[in-house]
Length: 386
View (cartoon, rainbow, N blue to C red):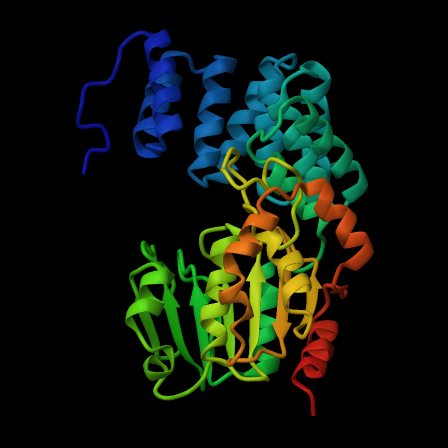
């Protein structure tokens, strides 16, 4: 099928503008076809080569992106954008040292551009140079709060080691639960971590599942509130109680707390419930209202809520990117404390600021364990007892 069913623009300026528009819209086939026309018109134009390299990079054609952007730099070595694209292409094929050189050059040529600074920080992070990466990314955010990609990059260097999906996989491996419930399914990446003999159940009002499940999995396309109002969770689990659950829904602490209370009714003393987005990175990404591409919401307020109202629970935190996991056990299905005090809890914690939380963490925070599989398995064994 012809990737360009509509007429292509004719002038070089028109083609360039059209490529940028198609690239911004994610229409890569159209952008690639326009780039071919642009290169036919200006085969030795540094701007055309650089733009075509950026399109090839987005399309996953890394060798082509490398060749095009390398020619662009040779023709126009004073262009920060060409160096940045070449750095990204080099990183895509694993040539990290050379990539770093070009990202540094891009920043030197255009030190005020946050995109080039962010890309420098990200390559430093990928190379394991966490302190340098953190300094660069923090500087970007100081001048451009919530700049795309900078917050998630800073999270990766702040919380090194395995990411949260890997840690959740460790938890599945250690517990081998008979039942697993997930609130907030999205693509199904974490729901797909369940392995035999687990029966899995997912709840999400708008899932976009793109993963294959390896165990019997029941997916309820509804909100968690509606699910618990209309369904008996134990009955949906074939008469079994919840053994492992993962809460990753609306990213607000009151909803997460409500989900926890609803799950606890179908739990037992050895049930483990895991909260995502429990370690706030900064005031913007951890705010209740989303204002950035990387956003964890105010789920972090769950920890002070449980600490204050449910000190009987056993809790530990795994500092895993991008925003930590809290692992909770010692549940009591007969407890009504969270339900009865819900309005009081929400009213009391809604004004809590990140600075308040940080002060409380230093004084009363739960155990934070190393982000290593052996440590997670050891603490899970302690939670579940002999």
